[in-house]
Length: 330
Image (tube, rainbow, N blue to C red):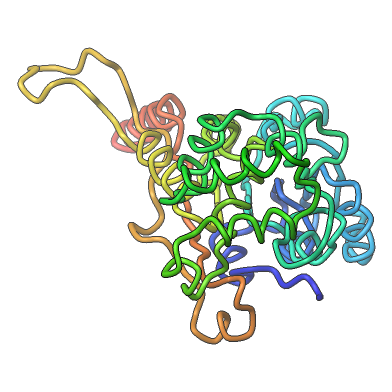
């Protein structure tokens, strides 16, 4: 299947791209979003980050027409600050994060992301990573597995599934995606097996998040990005499940919050100033037409935050305006 970027036009529009600006696509994937951003640059620069070797192979082909404006970095977006330091880039004008698994990753059976295709239990975005889904399924104890499935998969049958996994592996290890998917389905009550979505979906989600530490790095990355944004620069994040969306929503809200002193304090003593403002109170979601053309987009949500002007710069500018006005009066 061809990789179809989700919320492509909405995400690119949300970045409010300046032709001379510096932008980061922290989840390059197949390069669809990256291409749309780079095509809007003239003297600007796009930094494309991905830790998947195969993503770099595909994206270099996709981005060949705009390669002179693109810097490719094989790394994890959680290392954003260090990456920018290495590239000698103190500030950026925008960051895009598309937190979904790329279509080419889902459709490549060997990667182990799909519960409908036979493959080893891998699920690593970076194939040099130390832990696979198979290591977790066959090595964690029952309580750890149940906690993982409930926490990252929001799986209400987590205990039943964990117990079934442990019973099965006492006889032989669980080695493939379809083995695990069938085992999960059999552990479910009948009503759950008849739901529209595959019974193993939440289990696979939980394992993928744990293997790639997807949630542990998100809050830090957003805060690092806000620190490096130029005034007026924007962060746009596309999420695909409620856990990711909650972290993005809460982190943006924290960065947008000013004074946290009790209301009865006569003056602020905390000194906290808002760093960003929210662009829209509600997330942007795919249109019915996009969902029809790309069903994998159905759960996507786009949230955007914009860097506020530096208070010191604003004060200097205001002082300059006052001085200029006084000079004109004289």
